[in-house]
Image (cartoon, rainbow, N blue to C red; front, side, top):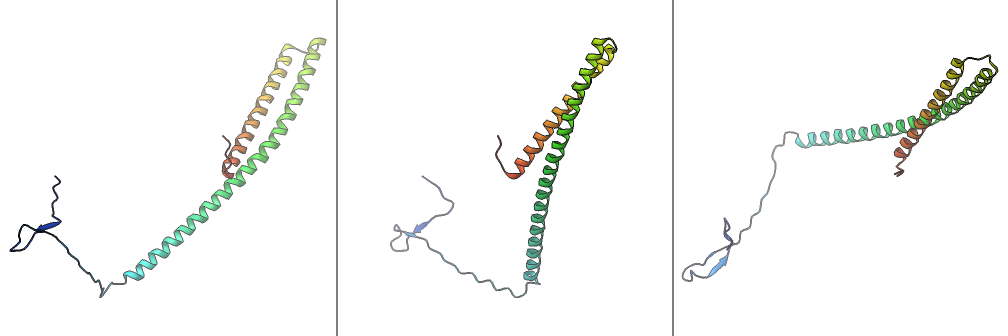
Length: 151
C-alpha cells in the first residue's frame, strides 16, 4: 500500500463517520504592485543591452567567417603559384643533374658536383610535395568552411 504524506480524502462528518469524502481546495491570488522602484525600466534596458550583445556577437561571427574564407582563398592561390614555382625548380634541378652527369661522364665534372645535383633534385621535389600538401590542406579548409562533407 502506498503511503502519502498527505491524504486525498478524509473521514466523513458525523453521524456517518465511516464514509470517505474527497478533499477539495481552491484559491485565488492577486498581485498588484504598488511600487516597483523602476524595475520594469531596468528590465527593458537589460533586454536592450542583451539584444545589442547578441547582434554584435552575430556580426563578429560573420566577420570571422568571411575572414577565414578570404584567408583560405588566399592560401589556395599562393600555394598554387608556389607549386608552379617549385615545379620549375624541379625541372631546372633535373636539367642541372643531366649536365652534371654529362660532365662527369666526359671527365670534366667531379663526383661531388654529381652528388650535389642529385641532392638539389631531391630538395626541389620535397618542396614540390610540401606545397602540394599545403594546397590540399587549404582546399580542405575551404571545403570545411563551405560546409561540404568531404569524408
